[in-house]
Length: 164
Image (cartoon, rainbow, N blue to C red; front, side, top):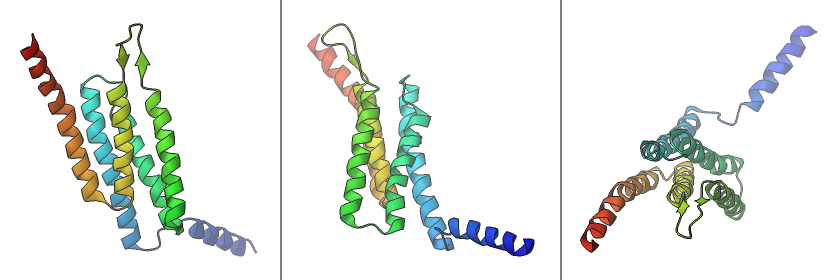
C-alpha cells in the first residue's frame, strides 16, 4: 500500500517537471536563458564600472526575467495576441522599475538616472529577444548598446571641449 502511494508521489513530481520532455527542449531553454543572463550581465557590468546603482545583478535579473516572461507563454502554446499582452505588461512593469532609478535634484537640470533607466528598459528588450529565440538580434543589440555607452560620452566631451 505504501509503495503505491510513493509511486503516485513520484509520478506526480515527474509530471510537474515534464515541461522540458526532451534534450532539445532543455538545451533550447537553457541556451535562451543563459544568453539573456549573460548579455544582461555584460550591460550591467558596464554600468557597475561607472558606479551606477543598477549594475551587474540587476541587469542580469531583468534580462533573465524578461526572457522567462516570453518563454513560459511560448511553452504553454499561447496565441500571438496573448503574447503581445504579456509583452505589454512586461514593458509597463520595466517602466516602473526604471522610474525608480530616476532622481530629480533641486535644480531644474539636475536629473540623474535616465541612462540607467533606459539601460534597464533595453536590457529587458534584449532578454525578450533572447527568450524568443532571437539570440543574434540580442547579441547585436548588446553590442550597439555598449558602443553607445562607451562612445557617446567621449563624443559629447569632444564637442563640449570645442565650445569652450
